[in-house]
Length: 386
Image (cartoon, rainbow, N blue to C red):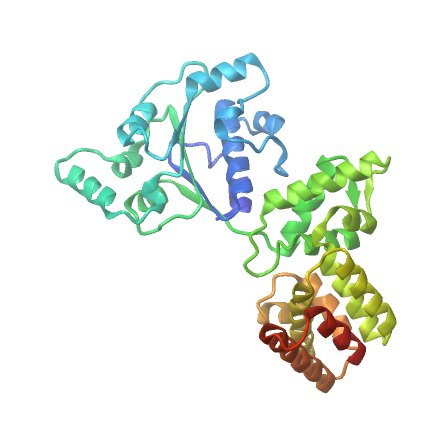
């Protein structure tokens, strides 16, 4: 269950109960956001309207560490957090301290809130911890996994973790007695919604075509990309600040070129557009501009190779009757926009020509790696011969 489920549970009140909650997964931005939102919700006594005054549903607000934020902006909010919110990092103080905090009555807020970050019992493979829990059970001592079956009604418990080991006793207990919300990477549609809201939060607007280019330039949707939603937010903030400094509230393609090194990906699209239309001189000039700006010729070659692989696959699969969305899925790509864009270029080449060009690209990569040809010269020759 991800962000849609937790939003539904918050709205319905299902999240506000004395049962463990685990926020985990790849997207730390969403983990941090919903940790804050749940804390605010519980502090307000389950009043979601109050919680939304502190953080908006698009993920805006402070994204700093847990202890640095308050349950609100008032002195009362800070006092509530100091007295009724306890944060543990791992189990550095021991599980007994966590259970003791859950057994403590709240002072100023409706419930006591206990937050446990990166507990090793959720992620590390260490067998010793599980064996200790089993020994406690044999001796009829209640360990943390057993304690989760009956959390006091005056307490709320939130675990947060990146990677989790679903075979561990603690994870199984949370899943059995509470709720696990796993936040995976966003797909293209949700990423567009998230990005648009971030630009709006920073006081700017972005059109659909610029938004698609922005997302592509961030590299978020690429296979094995390490960029996350913090990357998206930071780039949106940078672009918005740049536009506002020039007296504008709209984000343009020029802003992307000025502020985002990753815009090289769209420079390659411009080269492909020129090549596919037979404008070789224009393509070579775009290449020279990229190389003059310090871009690696070998990286450019790798991008060309990847793009032509998709173009060839697109032509073959579309000939079999598949549409762009199906082709994106079959090829294991995450960006519909990228596949559609390259599919448009692919239609300008015949199938045999695409195979020939891809073969040339593979051959040039081999020659460059073996030292038989210089990278810069290889690319220039390639564009001239296509």
